[in-house]
Image (cartoon, rainbow, N blue to C red; front, side, top):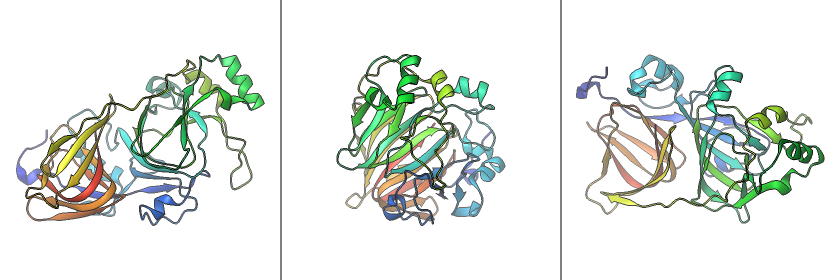
Length: 335
């Protein structure tokens, strides 16, 4: 049980991501967010992750130099009192730079993954569009109901794209993608993704591309057909969003589901006498992902943490009182 004594309250720390050089990526994560990761292309950065395919590194505070997985195993209280798997976060947070189209894909749900994928979690996710070039789109399900036979034939003869629902996107859009939804991020999109802690992707179609070794990437058509929702999808609408104001900060809810909650927070304390104040409770951690601007996170006692665009801050459960000063936009993730 977590001791509520102030001396035992926890402190936030910065994370360093792992990069992924998938063939559809670009250079914006280095150019726009100063990631300084020597990969070309740099398709994704896993900003807050305990997944074995790419755990984040702690780069500030008393745990600097240790993998986040190691820190959470030594300090399970950081995860909070909600039931958790030891040393593992239930979520994974990414930046995605789609210079080219991602594959047409689908993710399994938890039940299927637990049964057929060695106990892995499935993957429900949320996208927040940080930027989008003119005419950028994403794939969100099918125009009309599909049968497995029709889908198989369209994959075989290369006509799958005419059945896919393509949705224009723009900066600040939000999309919730449940497990089972056939989807794909289109070229020109810069995305923040919040998802279950899983790396399961079943590719249906990959535009007949080859990788750097001249080989076509593996498809997973049989598994995809087992988990895909083949019903026609309504065109996704942007959710109603309401800003709530407090000292130096405006907050709006972007997404709430059983796996995570995501809020967008706009900080501007330059003309405000009081800084935006908050702290985590004993039940759960929070993650702050800075998508624009910069600022300072002050801790009670005088210590502080500078943050800039692209930075990711992990705030353990039961934190000390914190205040933010600056002009910045953050995604605040909890679960």
